[in-house]
Length: 389
Image (cartoon, rainbow, N blue to C red; front, side, top):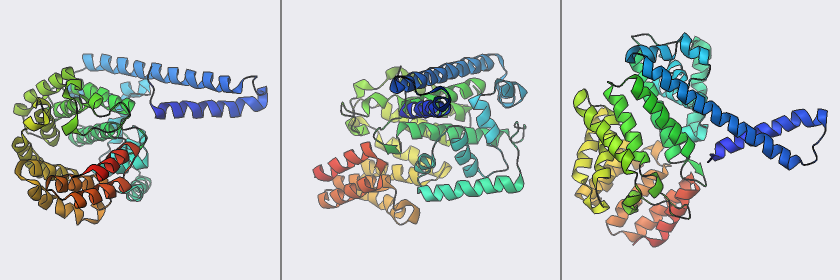
């Protein structure tokens, strides 16, 4: 059984709390270390059983409920009786009385269990900025008193949009950890995929939910190729594509091919289409950067954000030359909130390297390494700072 560091830390803390309660009354055991390990192990096993029970229950509900009614019922009395239906909690927390960013940030904290640092990382803002936003959102809740409640037919689309956003950001936090020695938090990524699959079963005709699930599957398909045997980061262009999970790629591709003609094309469908283009390329050199650039331009119109602009700049640099990519990236570096985003500086370093500016590239890689909290990314960026030519 593979456990994430977060789960193990939680179990260890539970064991220490149990020791603090029991040992003063019952005495210290003969082997305190073994006692703590045994209690922590039981906590881990209980947590795994709880998760398995939740998943089985959600499958039963999804398989027997009409699509639209199932999502409404997920946050109604039936869901409340189970006490731990994660999808239901996501729907409940996506309350329309809060702004979209506040709904998403607070739900990531309360339901997905992400730290303020993790939430700040996926929103690409400094941790103090995110802490202030969450504090203001909590103050709004206290002042206006919005209560959690099941969605109505009128506010269901807005809540569904927020739920999809939460699942995507939860996966992002697991796919690229914001801090620490590991690149991946497998449990967090797997949980996001599980809930996206559950949501898709509840609403199989919703094309944007299908796009979200396709995106997560296509991205997760590359997980085994993203690290070498030492745990160091391998960028997309250098990955061993034979390690990509072809079953996940097939599932994701079929989902997005069915979703795109079904209705209005949304941001998750466009991102899934981009991931599918990458998956179709047998080698990095075979990548259709012109098509990816076109898709990113569509995405920038549909859902503009610094992350989209960053990725568009890289795509333009690959399709039309590094100078064109640097010109697209320049406005991000002029924005106060993006100057400490290590990914912006890493992208600039990559484009400078392609342009033949080795000194500028090394300096940009070094600066990006100083900004990231991920030890895995820092090792990679420092290595690039010494090898860029």
